[in-house]
Each structure stands twice: as structure tokens, then as C-alpha cells.
Image (cartoon, rainbow over the protein chains, first blue to last red):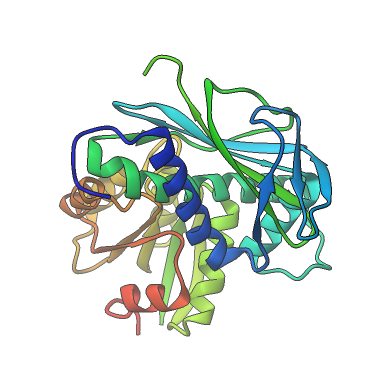
Length: 172
Length: 124
């Protein structure tokens, strides 16, 4: 991405979000694959097609968000099924599939995942365009719309599903 | 062998750093943990033999930039190395951290190799 002062478009941000997720997941979550997305951003479940074209639906049970603020403002939101959150926590902590984790550990891991993805996004897409600040991770068990939808990427993990979403503030 | 203080508001990240320190086979004698800059200063007060501090930047109550500045009021750069481990690897943040007294930085996500490279000069 060139060093210029114009703000990144929604499409550019989504491309960088994809690259950011890849960078974080490549070093943490061992099994992940971007899935064909069927549902709309903001729904309380994500639908996706598996490799055989079969549509599967996963509920959203937990979400973590990190806001960014500058000449453009919004949030990176990680929304997971319960199993997807467990996959991410086990991946980050390098635990095998048989290790159980307490809810606070899973929530903290999901927050750290959102933190890392938003940090990479900031470094790659926002920092070259000015001064931006990241918020601290917020965890919710009930998904919440944060501004206007900016795009979503859905991933199938080892056993669960995660939706990596970009939300943009209504008035920057 | 060094006593290392890890300052990060995420317990997950503190565990990851501890694991990576072991994987990187660095000479770490003991690891202490703190959840923000205020806790970090308290830990340093209780254990003055800490030989290396690894600190996050974006934390509640006292962030890493403020923390490094406070530590430098009593501990010179040559005596107590501080390395920032952060997702925020932007040029402005790095310059700020270095001018506040950090000795180096590592961006998240990191590998055992990047940690080994960043810390090799401080703990062998």
C-alpha cells in the first residue's frame, strides 16, 4: 500500500483485514480456511459453504472488538461460535484439542486475537495515513452492531467458525 | 540468568510470551507478571533484581509508554533493558517508545525466532 494521505477505501481495508487475519492465524491457529460467506454482516449466526458446497450455519456466541480512531474510525470485531472461540484460545495458547479452558481464559484469548488483528490492520493500512489510536479489547456475549457494516470474512477453524468483521463509524 | 518481568493486560499474551521464552532457549531464571504499568512498577519495587522487562504498550490504567518513562526515572537504560512487545509497531509509536527509554521492540504476532533475535543482546 502506498504512503499517501488519502483514506483507505472499505475494499482496501477489507483486503488488509484478510492479510492481517492470515498473519495472525498463520502463527497461532493451526487449522483455518476462509469459507464462502453466505449470511449478511450483523446477523446473529453466520452461514457458510463447506468444501462440498453444503451450507452450514453456526451461531455467534461470543465477540471481541477493538476500536480504531483517527481520520477514519471504526472497529475490528471477532465473532465466534463457542467452538470457534475455543479453537482460537487453544491455538494462541498452543494447547491440544483435549485441553479444556475456563470461560475467562477463552474471553481473554479472543480479546488478544482481536487486539493482534487490529494491530496488524493499523500498522499496514492506517499508520501510513496518519495518527490512529486503538482501544482496548471489549468482550460481549451478545453480538452488537457497531456503526455501519464494513465487511466480513468467515473462516472455518478446526471445529468452529469465526467471522472477522470490520465496522465503520457512522460519522468519522 | 535473568529474572524477567512481563507486563501485559492479557493473561493469554503473558502465557504466550513465557512459552516462547522457553522455546527460544533464552537464559531466564524466573518470570514475574504484571497486568499494567502500575502493577509493573509495584513488581519492580518488590523485586529490584529484575534484569529485563518485556512490556505491552496498549494497557489500561498505565500504558507501556508511560510505564517505560517511569521506570527510566530510577533505572538507566544500560542497567535495566526494556523491550516493548506490541501490536502497534508503527513508526511513531516505536520512536515514542525509544525516546521514552525502551531498548527495543517486537511486534505481535511473533515467533520464538523473532523473540530470540530481539532479546539475545540482553539475555543470552
